[in-house]
Length: 306
Image (cartoon, rainbow, N blue to C red; front, side, top):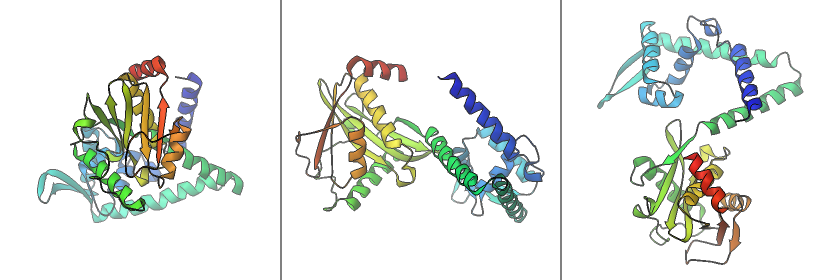
């Protein structure tokens, strides 16, 4: 890893922590540190399940429990079993908690305004633009991509969303029964695999590859949720599939796609896929692509990554 980049990231982190007041145990002038304040904001007026909070904030369960006990002792939240499922605990703001959250919102607005007030209009626009870019990149960095069994509920969620989107975007609709198959056995090792991407524990994308021994491998089921687009997730999933295909001995990757999927077509072309003559009879395809993997280099890269 580039030591200069690491040093710059650490300097940025220190600057942000200081400017936000994260070093002060009375965040925004209130009687609680930033962790408790953020938790109050995240619980919101509708309440949240504890497990959802833990996934959303990526918190250790013990630390989250300590934060909740502190807020509960202060009379700001209640933590109770969820009606109908006693295994799940739900957190809700009390009336005092809602009032405290409103104060935190007001003071957070004041803090944000204080960032912009000393700057010129042009500097303010640049700061907000840079913050948006940093937020996007940091969000991309916390997405987790991992092999997942096709029968897993999160995998099924992704596949249903994929089929639904194709049905909405294709001129003729989409019927999975008419399309060439990629069933559970074909997406399970050693025949193939399915990758699922998760953001804050929620599934936001998938992609699959089918292996055919010495024959070209096939990319299938590429999908990214609308709320996760713009994070480079499609390219990341594609690269991961390429690396894993190379590790399994594939030297050529193939895929087909529909003319309605302009973004996907652009991504495949920019990733080095060349359009070729049709190599199957997929009824929904208008374009067929192929990419030759760089042999030993790809296999070595895949082995190092896994």
